[in-house]
Length: 314
Image 1 (cartoon, one colour):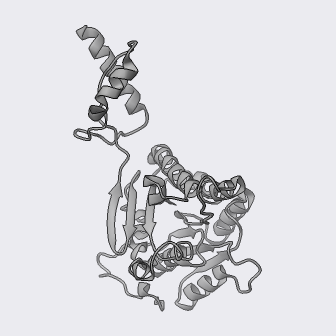
Image 2: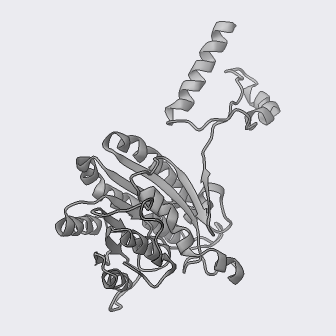
Image 3: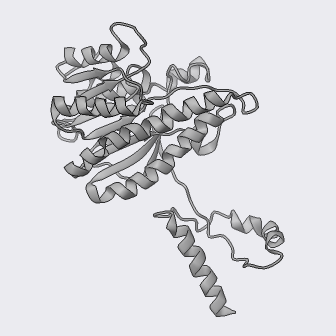
């Protein structure tokens, strides 16, 4: 199979990550990152549901165009033009895939919109609409495939987060909130899915797409091609994928982001605890010896153990 994009070449067949016999759903796949993800998965043998709502009444839709590209190259794909904000429509999309191919192995939650404005000027409807597409859209799709993946004892779910959620970005309070919420969703779904062979990860991409074209210079955008991000999705969708990883990708570079917990200090339940905290904040934020907790309760266990240890010593 060959496409007229830079996805057209394949690595050494003996080491290539392949998806033969597997079925993938990619949302927001009519253009940009989603299109590249769909094409790359198909190139490597996956049957692909190409979902995209951004086409309006256009015929053929953007999703249809991507499907035709895949089919013309010898691959298998079907289009779905429903919005990820419609939970019932996402259930129907999953049923469409099951009727066609009988299984779902991979879900790439990529659909997204921007409604950038400073928080002072942000309309609450714009805040909600971004949350609905990015966060609830991923929830709807993940919920629709979850029981299928559990029954199969296998699944790969990729959630698209962002550096705006991890670190903040001026004018993107809605987008940042949605994207960081996806990290929280990933953390818990990964814990719940591990016994069923469902690995759940986040991708934080930097890419030149319709969503980012007004945010960077042309020279910068030229370096951040969507296809340079897609190898991250290929890895996170593969049988060798990790779970509970936040993979950052852009311009051919890959890194991991972590939510860490510092060693901190013990002050105790005393009248001047706030004042002591003020004095000792440098110790609290000192990153030497920080850890990445295996689950949320690890914070509480550490606090309880420290309190008990101090009580014994006193």
